[in-house]
Amino acid sequence: GRKINDTRVEAETQYLLESAWKLYENENVIKLVDGSLDHEEYMPEEVKRIIEIALLCTQSVVASRPTMSEVVVLLLSRNSPEIMPTRPTFIDSISRVRGETSTSSSSSASKATVSISHLSAR
Image (cartoon, rainbow, N blue to C red; front, side):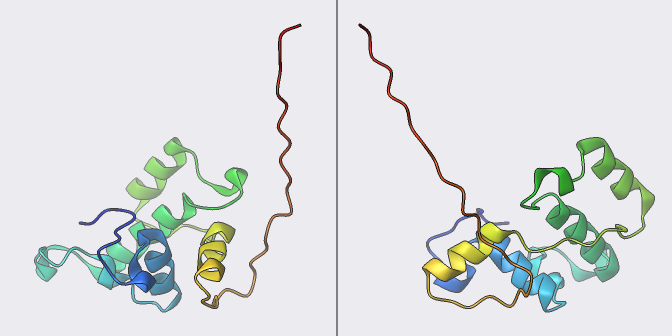
């Protein structure tokens, strides 16, 4: 296993979620499996299914994420999710900050603004 943000590794694999998406998009999620595990103790199809479920939980739009009870049903069903995950926009933002290009064709950036109010006593 590894931390979600590991500054001791090269920049392109520093963020675990970003690395997971790149491997998922390249159909190579098996590289996410901890190297200390015996490769005979898991099935690659099962790894792919579980990673797909995990990636569904990272969707940018909260309503697109499964509830915990839906995750349990997905894990117990042994079937791949009917809805395929899409790359969260915040991953594309991280890539742009580092000057990388995204392989996602459906990303969008938020144009949300923030206002801050300071309250003071009379």
